[in-house]
Length: 245
Ligand code: LP5
Ligand code: MN
Image 1 (cartoon, rainbow, N blue to C red):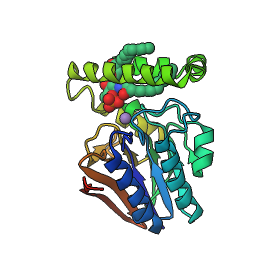
Image 2: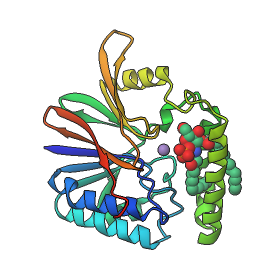
Image 3: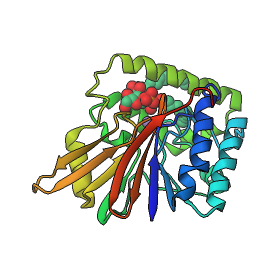
């Protein structure tokens, strides 16, 4: 049983090389997998399933083809594409996961999540996250014309970019105590997430001295990153993305 995990591809019309690398990944690596987990921020931003842009259509087709080949697809929302809805998931043949998904992996209780939930020292971000999760606000946003939605998303992205320049590296990383609390609340010993763009396998010591592992996936930019778990083998892998793609 082979399971692959990816996150933070940030696909957009301005990076066709990333889209091509992703499609190739789906046609090669993922074809040999039984399950593919996308742990958020597949897109640079998402303004509604009704957008139906050429990029969305291209990605939908590639994911659907993989699903039709028998690979099970799972999606966990990121902080940039938290508006991905049931319609897009259905079209791709993907199952949407809850914000923290508990399952068994490599014989351990594991948690799958995007990771932004763990950055609790970033109070401005957590406020932003709370406000944008309000259903009535999302409803109003989704009923605006597409062109307005794109402008708002771009404004928020600019605000986020500016905001990040004022924040320290540690504030934008996970808060260690929040990681431990999350492990303990779910009685888990393995965690897989993205968001921070700092790929690594971290050992974590829980309050009762039990050992756990936190695996951070890498973002796709110059290199593509994925985690491969088969039977009891866990490998965090990367390779350069060919800019000529
Ligand atoms: O994404 P990244 O890595 O750059 O930064 C994140 C946090 N930023 C965000 C914002 C997203 O990048 C943009 C999301 C676009 C969504 C489009 C749909 C909109 C739907 C609205 C539905 C109601 O998540 C960043 C973290 C960083 O990770 C590290 O963890 O620090 O957090 C922020 O920067 C948040 C800021 O601190 C506060 C938000 C500024 C918003 C400015 C809005 C201005 C204009 C609004 C116009 C209406
Ligand atoms: Mn993210």
